[in-house]
Image (cartoon, rainbow, N blue to C red; front, top):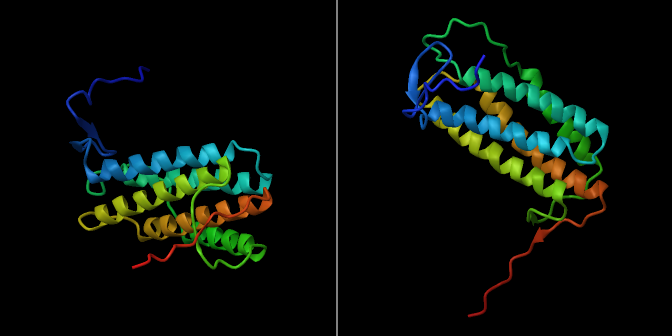
Length: 185
């Protein structure tokens, strides 16, 4: 099987179900951003972090594949049986967030991204997750999107933020707090 098909050379691609759409279509942007997010999460997983974090990140990657496959399908034409997303996926993130938060200092300021490479990767992934959420909610305005997808992406961005804080704490890296200076008149 060849990896290249040449069918996208004119700027169009096929959804699952056969519908051809421009490569800039909001559905393509949605699942393309999910794919980018999944790559960032893989990069976080490749760092020297606790095995428990790596296991949750692997589950997140698998869930993102489910979401990507759902978004890649034309809801009107696809007859393919695709994996389903369930509420337990978002609940897993909520439990992980709560567990990580227990050992962290109270959040009293906005946090500037940075402090260490892995913490920065968490913030980059969080930003890509928010972009994915924006694309998916845009798609949902005119097409069928599983409500659990939007909920999951919202929780995932929170998870990535807290994971960044937790990793900074575990690595003994000071959080980069944003403390705005008052302007003098």
